[in-house]
Image (cartoon, rainbow, N blue to C red; front, side, top):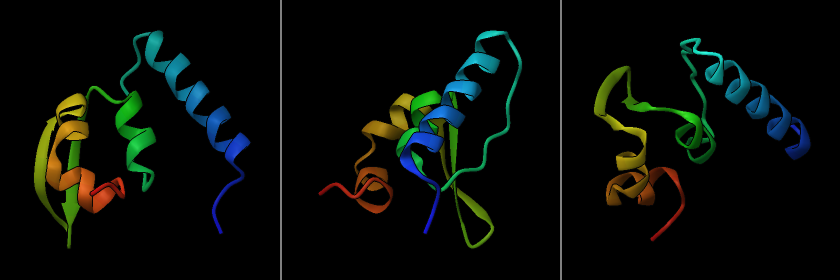
Length: 73
């Protein structure tokens, strides 16, 4: 079912504010687009193993990530 979209936005606003204060955050999130939008670096984990790691912006451009996790073709 998930959280209401307004609540998700509020949570990510708070995460951005914490980040802007210089605090490091470990975020584990299924919403890949939102998570990579706020992250500096990202890791893709499948079956308990890291299968991809890169700068968040690079992962957002990665065709494999876009198809498998962002719902794009």
